[in-house]
Each structure stands twice: as C-alpha cells, then as structure tokens.
Image (cartoon, rainbow, N blue to C red):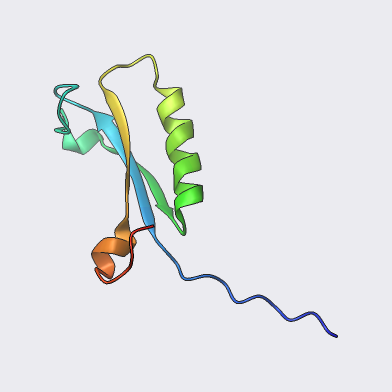
Length: 82
C-alpha cells in the first residue's frame, strides 16, 4: 500500500511576547515600545518551547515576563480550549 501523506492538523496559532513589568504582581508593562515580540507559532508545543527559552534567558531580571497568547481562541471563539 502506498504511503498516504498525512493531513496537517488544524493550525492553533499562539503568540509569544514579553517585556519588563511595572510591578511583578501585575501584567502591566513598563514600556510598550520595548515589548519583545518573539513570534507566532502554529501550535502550543512550539510556542511553549520559544516561551521557555526566552523566560530562561531572562531569569536574572525579576521584572521581565513572557506570555503565551492563544490566538486561535481569539480568532475562533468556538475552538475548544487546548
């Protein structure tokens, strides 16, 4: 039987970004012009990998935080949480 190409999974886009917070107890940034937009990723696993690398690289700065935004939930609110 010939190999059948696998259908790619549905894109579940995720945004990874970060910056310095004005207070470590909040999610308000000191300077929006200095946000680090890491990128948009096709799935959570790749977004998590990018987030982890950035977060570990800034571990010495307590005010620096990186976040993962589930863009697919904003683009298609009917998408189940993943």
